[in-house]
Image 1 (cartoon, rainbow, N blue to C red):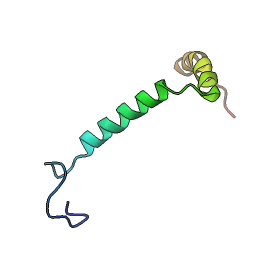
Image 2: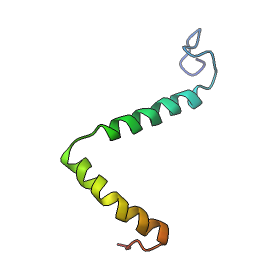
Image 3: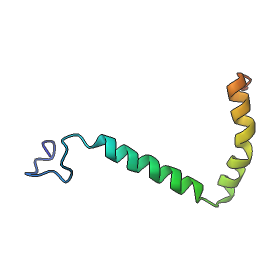
Amino acid sequence: MQVLGHAHAIYPYEYPALFSMLVAFAGIFFFSGTDKSAQAVRERALYGNQLVGCELGMMKQG
């Protein structure tokens, strides 16, 4: 409101980042789950090994 010089805010809050971040994360979660591209399928197949290696500190550098 104050940054853009509008008389009234769309949200009734001066700092709506809490709500906009929630919407952004929900959108990312939804759209990444519905992605059926070949790249997404390859990345999902590799995720399990990457997660285990990361949690055990066995990730290869470089």
